[in-house]
Image 1 (cartoon, rainbow, N blue to C red):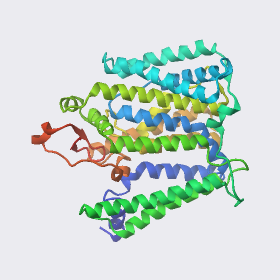
Image 2 (cartoon, helix red, strand yellow; image 1 turned 30 degrees about the vertical axis):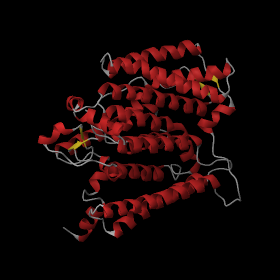
Image 3 (cartoon, one colour; image 1 turned 45 degrees about the vertical axis):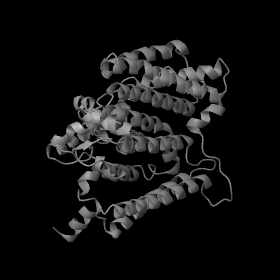
Amino acid sequence: MSKFSTGLRTLTGGRGLSAYSMIIALVVIIIVFQILTGGLTLDPTNVINMVQQYSYILILAIGMVMLIIAGHIDLSVGSVAAFVGIVVAQSMAVWHWPSWAAMLLGLATGVVVGAWQGFWVAFVRVPAFIVTLAGMLIFRGANQVVGNSTASPTPDSYNWIGNGFLPDFGPDFGYSNPTLIIGLIVVIALIWNEFRGRRKREAMGATLQPMWVTVVKLIVLCGITVYATLLFGSGRVGTSFPVVGIIAGVLILIYSFITSNTIFGRHVYALGGNRPAAGLSGVNSRRVDFLLMVNMAVLAAVAGMVFVGNAQASGPFDGTGWELDAIAAVFVGGAAIFGGIGTVPGSIIGAFVMAFLANGMSLLGFDSSWVSIIRGLVLIAAVGFDVYNKTQGRPSLTGILFRRLQKTPPPVTEESLEAGPVGIDQASNDKVRLP
């Protein structure tokens, strides 16, 4: 093996570039469209607009990946988002509620919808596919009834969550100051987290990666962060990092922590890896299933509200096909078809892949029919490649990327399975003991 190959495997944690295939695919897609569109793909205005327009996919993918990991699926998210959107819009336009009260009403509506669907899934044991298929019909009809099949405009005080930007302040450096501050915070957090992880591994007596690997990783990650910061901060006057981007970013961080570092998150993986064994080991499957359905409906409500804010109105056709966008993002991001494997960050990568594909083809003037065809081909190719990797004993597409963020318990033997709940590690497919 050459020195280059050895160094590459060291840099990638011993797994080579194949473990980062979807990240590489995303970079290639961006570069290709950047060339074909004459630089429009990474134009600040286009990137800002793309974040605002496709933020609903990011938000929905967070909840969808958790459901798919647990072995479920939700076909109603588009209809639920549309229903919440029209309820929120009507509450302001007809009932004259203030924006903050309308937002709380939207979240409460999501909780009620999720509890309704969660009841059937968790306690009546109707498959989530059937429950959410019924929900797709019910809440699409409810959207038409509440809105009388017409659009309902929303005030500027509300639209800020969908098309607003962080307010600028301070001296003029040629960039948006709030965006520069966010970028600086992210860079500091990346450096702190990397060296904090090294100190923890050293204290545990674990083998440390060479310092040059850490330095190279930080240079790449911080370089990407700085570039994105300057990109978002150099948009037209009056723009900065979108508010909806802040909302999506906070949700990504919260749910990445929940799925990787909490008992609930590990129980989700355990149910998807082996539901009967998880139940026998003490995992309360009904509770987990119920909370997952409620969580998905609440995130659908958030997605619907930010979409309405961006569109400045709620319409009768909002949310059409959103469930397919979210499901595609999750599978492109490396989730397993039968559950047990997947990550929130991986699904976000999948969402960006689909978003850049759609945006790039739109900039090139592709007909919407061809956009659908190409996105479908990308989906089947990604899932097919993932299945092939598993048959070859290789890791899931992007699950390995964030393995270090996960506090995975040590593998257990068959003789000790009865000692506590057991799940499946999404990176290695090993059985692991749960708390």
